Length: 248
Image 1 (cartoon, rainbow, N blue to C red):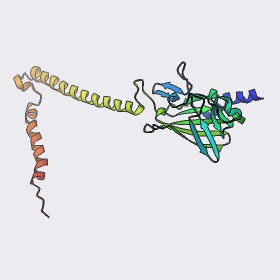
Image 2: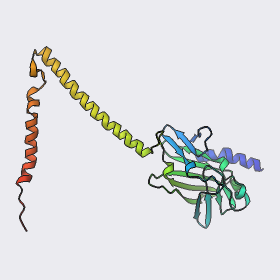
Image 3: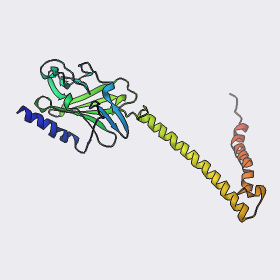
Protein backbone atom coordinates (compact mmCIF):
# COMPACT_ATOMS: atom_id res chain seq x y z
CA UNK A 1 0.00 0.00 0.00
CA UNK A 2 2.86 2.37 0.85
CA UNK A 3 4.53 1.79 -2.53
CA UNK A 4 1.26 2.56 -4.32
CA UNK A 5 0.94 5.80 -2.38
CA UNK A 6 4.50 6.82 -3.29
CA UNK A 7 3.90 5.98 -6.95
CA UNK A 8 0.84 8.23 -6.89
CA UNK A 9 2.84 11.04 -5.31
CA UNK A 10 5.69 10.75 -7.80
CA UNK A 11 3.62 10.49 -10.98
CA UNK A 12 0.20 12.05 -10.42
CA UNK A 13 0.90 14.98 -8.07
CA UNK A 14 3.58 16.68 -10.19
CA UNK A 15 1.19 16.52 -13.13
CA UNK A 16 -1.54 18.18 -11.07
CA UNK A 17 0.83 20.89 -9.92
CA UNK A 18 2.63 21.43 -13.21
CA UNK A 19 -0.20 21.73 -15.75
CA UNK A 20 1.46 23.41 -18.72
CA UNK A 21 4.71 23.94 -16.83
CA UNK A 22 8.03 22.80 -18.23
CA UNK A 23 10.36 20.75 -16.07
CA UNK A 24 13.85 22.18 -15.81
CA UNK A 25 16.44 19.40 -16.02
CA UNK A 26 19.56 20.35 -14.01
CA UNK A 27 22.98 20.19 -15.69
CA UNK A 28 24.88 16.93 -15.24
CA UNK A 29 26.13 16.49 -11.69
CA UNK A 30 24.14 19.44 -10.35
CA UNK A 31 21.45 19.43 -7.66
CA UNK A 32 17.79 19.52 -8.68
CA UNK A 33 17.56 23.14 -7.46
CA UNK A 34 19.81 24.29 -10.30
CA UNK A 35 18.21 25.35 -13.56
CA UNK A 36 19.97 26.48 -16.71
CA UNK A 37 18.03 27.87 -19.66
CA UNK A 38 18.67 30.31 -22.48
CA UNK A 39 17.67 33.07 -20.04
CA UNK A 40 20.48 32.23 -17.61
CA UNK A 41 21.06 30.18 -14.47
CA UNK A 42 19.21 29.82 -11.18
CA UNK A 43 21.37 28.12 -8.55
CA UNK A 44 19.94 27.75 -5.06
CA UNK A 45 22.88 25.70 -3.75
CA UNK A 46 24.48 29.01 -2.73
CA UNK A 47 21.79 29.61 -0.10
CA UNK A 48 21.02 26.02 0.94
CA UNK A 49 22.67 24.38 3.94
CA UNK A 50 24.85 21.32 3.40
CA UNK A 51 25.02 20.17 7.03
CA UNK A 52 21.77 18.20 7.39
CA UNK A 53 20.05 21.22 8.91
CA UNK A 54 17.17 23.33 7.55
CA UNK A 55 17.99 26.77 6.17
CA UNK A 56 14.55 28.28 6.75
CA UNK A 57 12.09 28.28 9.63
CA UNK A 58 8.65 29.83 9.33
CA UNK A 59 5.42 29.72 11.32
CA UNK A 60 1.84 30.03 10.15
CA UNK A 61 -1.52 29.30 11.77
CA UNK A 62 -0.10 27.56 14.86
CA UNK A 63 2.21 25.39 12.75
CA UNK A 64 5.97 25.64 12.28
CA UNK A 65 7.82 24.72 9.10
CA UNK A 66 11.44 23.83 8.37
CA UNK A 67 12.72 23.99 4.80
CA UNK A 68 15.97 23.47 2.94
CA UNK A 69 16.26 23.40 -0.86
CA UNK A 70 18.75 21.23 -2.74
CA UNK A 71 19.87 19.03 0.17
CA UNK A 72 17.97 16.94 2.69
CA UNK A 73 18.02 17.47 6.44
CA UNK A 74 16.96 15.75 9.61
CA UNK A 75 15.07 17.45 12.42
CA UNK A 76 12.75 16.56 15.29
CA UNK A 77 11.28 13.08 15.31
CA UNK A 78 9.46 10.50 13.18
CA UNK A 79 10.04 10.73 9.43
CA UNK A 80 11.41 14.29 9.63
CA UNK A 81 14.55 12.89 11.28
CA UNK A 82 15.35 10.70 8.25
CA UNK A 83 17.96 13.05 6.76
CA UNK A 84 16.17 13.28 3.39
CA UNK A 85 13.51 15.78 4.42
CA UNK A 86 12.98 18.91 2.32
CA UNK A 87 10.00 20.40 4.19
CA UNK A 88 8.91 19.43 7.69
CA UNK A 89 5.83 20.54 9.64
CA UNK A 90 5.98 20.84 13.42
CA UNK A 91 9.28 18.91 13.39
CA UNK A 92 7.63 15.53 12.93
CA UNK A 93 5.37 15.61 9.82
CA UNK A 94 7.04 15.35 6.41
CA UNK A 95 5.57 17.67 3.78
CA UNK A 96 8.08 16.74 1.06
CA UNK A 97 11.28 14.76 0.56
CA UNK A 98 14.38 16.12 -1.13
CA UNK A 99 14.37 13.13 -3.50
CA UNK A 100 11.14 14.44 -5.01
CA UNK A 101 12.42 17.95 -5.63
CA UNK A 102 11.73 19.19 -9.18
CA UNK A 103 12.00 22.67 -10.69
CA UNK A 104 9.44 23.90 -13.23
CA UNK A 105 8.90 27.08 -15.23
CA UNK A 106 6.09 28.46 -17.38
CA UNK A 107 8.25 29.87 -20.18
CA UNK A 108 7.51 33.42 -19.00
CA UNK A 109 10.22 33.73 -16.36
CA UNK A 110 8.26 32.22 -13.45
CA UNK A 111 9.96 29.35 -11.62
CA UNK A 112 8.91 27.05 -8.82
CA UNK A 113 10.08 23.98 -6.91
CA UNK A 114 7.73 21.04 -6.35
CA UNK A 115 7.94 18.48 -3.55
CA UNK A 116 5.99 15.29 -2.84
CA UNK A 117 6.34 11.98 -0.92
CA UNK A 118 5.10 13.68 2.27
CA UNK A 119 3.23 11.96 5.08
CA UNK A 120 -0.36 11.13 4.11
CA UNK A 121 0.32 12.29 0.54
CA UNK A 122 1.34 15.79 1.57
CA UNK A 123 3.01 17.84 -1.15
CA UNK A 124 4.18 21.42 -1.67
CA UNK A 125 5.14 24.06 -4.19
CA UNK A 126 7.74 26.75 -3.47
CA UNK A 127 7.44 29.77 -5.74
CA UNK A 128 10.75 31.44 -6.50
CA UNK A 129 10.42 35.21 -6.26
CA UNK A 130 13.32 37.26 -7.62
CA UNK A 131 14.30 40.13 -5.32
CA UNK A 132 17.64 41.58 -6.42
CA UNK A 133 17.81 43.90 -3.41
CA UNK A 134 17.37 41.09 -0.90
CA UNK A 135 20.68 39.58 0.21
CA UNK A 136 19.03 37.69 3.06
CA UNK A 137 16.84 34.89 1.67
CA UNK A 138 13.50 34.38 3.39
CA UNK A 139 10.34 32.36 2.96
CA UNK A 140 6.65 32.90 3.61
CA UNK A 141 3.83 30.38 3.67
CA UNK A 142 0.10 29.99 3.98
CA UNK A 143 0.46 26.30 4.83
CA UNK A 144 -2.27 24.15 3.33
CA UNK A 145 -4.95 26.77 3.83
CA UNK A 146 -6.12 26.70 0.20
CA UNK A 147 -6.19 22.91 -0.09
CA UNK A 148 -5.65 20.27 2.55
CA UNK A 149 -2.19 18.67 2.39
CA UNK A 150 -1.20 20.98 -0.53
CA UNK A 151 1.27 23.49 0.93
CA UNK A 152 2.30 26.79 -0.63
CA UNK A 153 5.56 28.64 0.05
CA UNK A 154 7.35 31.65 -1.43
CA UNK A 155 11.13 31.98 -1.45
CA UNK A 156 12.44 35.55 -1.77
CA UNK A 157 16.11 36.13 -2.59
CA UNK A 158 18.40 37.58 -5.22
CA UNK A 159 19.60 34.04 -5.86
CA UNK A 160 16.29 33.27 -7.59
CA UNK A 161 17.14 35.91 -10.20
CA UNK A 162 18.74 34.68 -13.37
CA UNK A 163 22.50 34.91 -13.64
CA UNK A 164 23.83 35.32 -17.15
CA UNK A 165 26.81 33.18 -18.28
CA UNK A 166 29.02 36.22 -17.63
CA UNK A 167 27.92 36.33 -14.00
CA UNK A 168 25.55 39.31 -14.08
CA UNK A 169 21.94 39.24 -12.98
CA UNK A 170 18.97 39.59 -15.31
CA UNK A 171 18.63 43.33 -14.63
CA UNK A 172 22.33 43.86 -15.42
CA UNK A 173 21.84 41.97 -18.66
CA UNK A 174 18.88 44.21 -19.46
CA UNK A 175 21.07 47.27 -18.89
CA UNK A 176 23.67 45.82 -21.27
CA UNK A 177 20.94 45.24 -23.87
CA UNK A 178 19.81 48.86 -23.52
CA UNK A 179 23.42 49.96 -24.00
CA UNK A 180 23.66 47.92 -27.19
CA UNK A 181 20.46 49.53 -28.48
CA UNK A 182 21.89 52.99 -27.81
CA UNK A 183 25.12 52.13 -29.64
CA UNK A 184 23.05 50.75 -32.52
CA UNK A 185 21.11 54.00 -32.82
CA UNK A 186 24.34 56.03 -32.83
CA UNK A 187 25.86 53.74 -35.46
CA UNK A 188 22.80 53.95 -37.72
CA UNK A 189 22.74 57.75 -37.38
CA UNK A 190 26.42 58.11 -38.32
CA UNK A 191 26.04 55.66 -41.20
CA UNK A 192 22.98 57.54 -42.50
CA UNK A 193 24.84 60.88 -42.43
CA UNK A 194 27.82 59.40 -44.28
CA UNK A 195 25.56 57.82 -46.92
CA UNK A 196 23.73 61.13 -47.32
CA UNK A 197 26.93 63.08 -48.03
CA UNK A 198 28.57 60.39 -50.17
CA UNK A 199 25.55 59.67 -52.36
CA UNK A 200 24.56 63.35 -52.51
CA UNK A 201 28.11 64.35 -53.43
CA UNK A 202 28.26 61.79 -56.23
CA UNK A 203 24.95 63.01 -57.64
CA UNK A 204 26.11 66.63 -57.53
CA UNK A 205 29.45 65.79 -59.13
CA UNK A 206 28.41 63.44 -61.94
CA UNK A 207 24.78 64.34 -62.55
CA UNK A 208 24.86 68.08 -61.98
CA UNK A 209 28.52 68.47 -63.07
CA UNK A 210 29.39 70.54 -60.01
CA UNK A 211 32.90 70.98 -58.65
CA UNK A 212 34.73 71.88 -55.43
CA UNK A 213 32.56 72.62 -52.41
CA UNK A 214 29.51 72.72 -54.66
CA UNK A 215 29.40 68.92 -54.57
CA UNK A 216 28.17 69.17 -50.96
CA UNK A 217 24.44 68.39 -51.09
CA UNK A 218 22.31 71.32 -49.87
CA UNK A 219 25.47 73.36 -49.43
CA UNK A 220 23.70 76.60 -48.51
CA UNK A 221 21.78 74.92 -45.71
CA UNK A 222 24.87 73.32 -44.14
CA UNK A 223 26.87 76.55 -44.35
CA UNK A 224 24.07 78.47 -42.66
CA UNK A 225 23.44 75.79 -40.03
CA UNK A 226 25.91 77.19 -37.41
CA UNK A 227 24.21 80.61 -37.66
CA UNK A 228 20.76 79.02 -37.37
CA UNK A 229 21.89 77.19 -34.24
CA UNK A 230 23.33 80.41 -32.81
CA UNK A 231 20.07 82.27 -33.49
CA UNK A 232 18.09 79.51 -31.82
CA UNK A 233 20.27 79.67 -28.73
CA UNK A 234 19.93 83.46 -28.56
CA UNK A 235 16.14 83.20 -28.79
CA UNK A 236 16.18 80.94 -25.74
CA UNK A 237 18.90 82.72 -23.73
CA UNK A 238 18.02 86.38 -24.39
CA UNK A 239 14.72 86.49 -22.43
CA UNK A 240 16.46 84.85 -19.48
CA UNK A 241 19.36 87.29 -19.63
CA UNK A 242 17.04 90.30 -19.84
CA UNK A 243 14.80 89.13 -16.98
CA UNK A 244 15.06 91.43 -13.96
CA UNK A 245 14.07 90.42 -10.49
CA UNK A 246 12.45 92.93 -8.20
CA UNK A 247 14.38 93.29 -4.97
CA UNK A 248 12.50 92.45 -1.77
